[in-house]
Length: 330
Image 1 (spheres, helix red, strand yellow):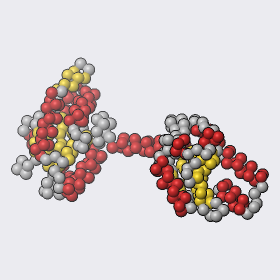
Image 2 (cartoon, helix red, strand yellow; image 1 turned 120 degrees about the horizontal axis):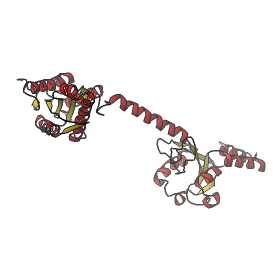
Image 3 (cartoon, one colour; image 1 turned 180 degrees about the vertical axis):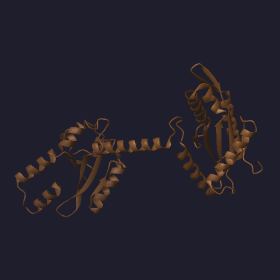
Image 4 (cartoon, helix red, strand yellow; image 1 turned 30 degrees about the horizontal axis):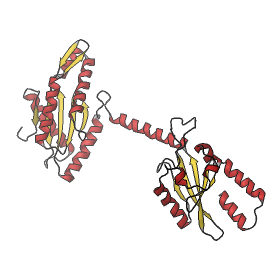
């Protein structure tokens, strides 16, 4: 470090005025923020980088308390970091993922123009005096905006890809794979917690007739409208998915069979009352729903799902447009 070298050379009597000049010139010209603080957090050094990005000249900063100058700096957090440097005589580091910045400087980099402010890494270094004590610390501020923005964009892109891989394009619900994964996770969770939970399977009655009569585009609109009504009926904790074609699945955590049937009947009546308009057509639809509450008899999530599917089959055999709870007697 420049400061360490200067301190050591001064102690050895090896520094002349030219050495001091070039070292100070380097500290002013480096593309890194540098300030020096004493134990009272009074600013002793404020280099050109900090002048340029803060818009505050060194003459306005030197000999003033850091926190009185910059009220946005979290004083308690910063002092905890600095105190460890004073006490243990060792450096401390903070990266932008932990705290985006120490000083909220505007971002002027053209490549990362999407960032409103400069992302910063910070290093605190002990400055040893001639008696080997730390009375001052150096604070180095690194502009890592390019790195931070690129990483954030990559993470956002990966999150979008993950979401796309889990989402059914037509309905924006979970696709079959993602929904079954959630069902398996819920199965194991309920086995441990012993809380009630129900799974619902339902499909659109006579959906083939919709496609044959009005066309597949109209059928797609029916599926989209059904999924919209489903989202409007669910709780935030419920998990829905398009299982395939016109068939849907819903996981109802912390819900017993009685309340699950309340949910299915509410959804069924809403869809029955809905008129799907497509071009010049007005299409009325109904749904049939099968419900299964997880029990000790369910050996796996597949068994649980099969029980709801059997209840759905009973609905179809009984005239459709109704809800049916799974029973061994069916």
